[in-house]
Image (tube, rainbow, N blue to C red; front, side, top):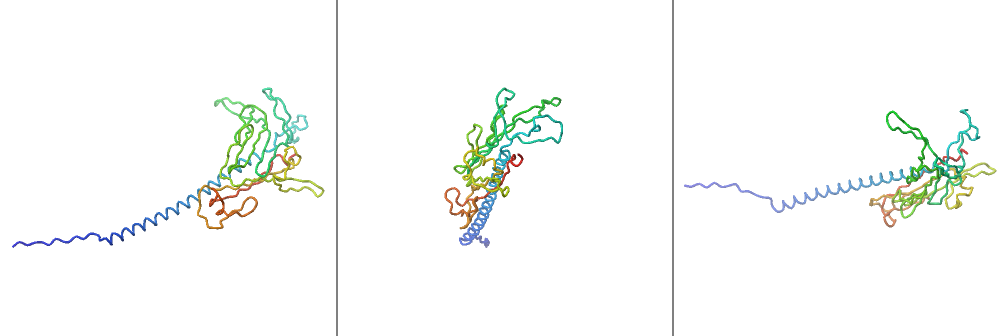
Length: 294
């Protein structure tokens, strides 16, 4: 007689088991995507804050470099007009640069410190003399040359090295969300974007019967012309600016920052590209190099 062997029955996944597996897989993917989005949001926010910090530091460095030189001329080791070898002889800042011929026979600039600074609430023009500096360079390992050159530049790298004694001028202006700088014949060029506010305040020294005092004055309260004696009383300049980021952030209602006037501004109620964007305030005071030394 023939015997038949019973083969073991094979069972696959049922429809319910398949659906349960799909649901668990989708839950795992959902959790992973949520963690990725949260991580990306945090990374974007940190990167945005770092970018704003770097841009703010750069702006203050550029403006500060020019402001600290405002009104400065060269140090005169012979103010009395008599050559002296005494190391204790007077050394002073010149207060005026008289026009004189340079090595090419051209007349240099005539510059006075009262023309060093002028501005308003959101603009400032800075000037100082471009005098010759001693320079050293070597053609090879055995020969070297020491001479003089005009090394000073304004905020956009002008003017070029063309052997001229002239006034270095930097004109900072704020318009359309960008901070721009020009001067010495160059058109204004943007040096910073995403600028929400740019404010300039002047430290003015006044002397009366009670003594000397320094107080802050808005640009709109200062005279319009640089030749006004009031500009000679400016000892320092305070620069305040607010920068905003490029990353949209899911902010809770009422998220605010403090602007240059000390007012609280709700970032969730702002319009345009500034809505729900990180805002940071930067403020620094720069003393004019020449003031207090004359």
